[in-house]
Amino acid sequence: MFGGGNHPGGDIAREDPRIKVALNFFRTESASLYKRSMLKAGFKPQKTHECDEAYLDFVSKALEVENERLAVLNENNKKRKSGSVNDAIALDRPKRRRSSYLEYLKELQNFQE
Image 1 (tube, one colour):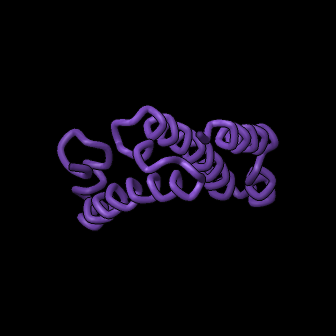
Image 2 (tube, helix red, strand yellow):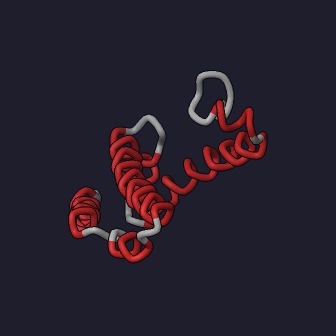
Image 3 (cartoon, helix red, strand yellow):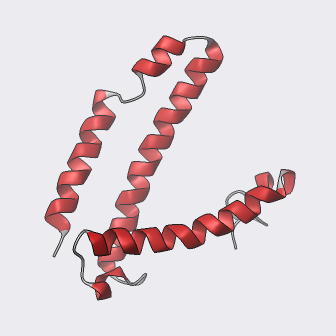
């Protein structure tokens, strides 16, 4: 289970128990979101099972995109803290991240069966 012991978020959950509850909701909702997203994109229902290779590939790509988004948010937050608000706004969607996101969307279109 998320939010305890050596799991991701364990230290934060001890500081704020709401984090543990939120992580549990997130885990449940994200699994449903992955499946719904795949179904809406045209994947066959059997491809949305958690042990299917297509599902695992999709989740990996979705997490890569989220990690890129998080990196941008962290960069912007650091800029805001240092007082460079205009720099933070400019970093919001760097070209290198935008192009990788567009490449990801193109891959998804080609990935569908």
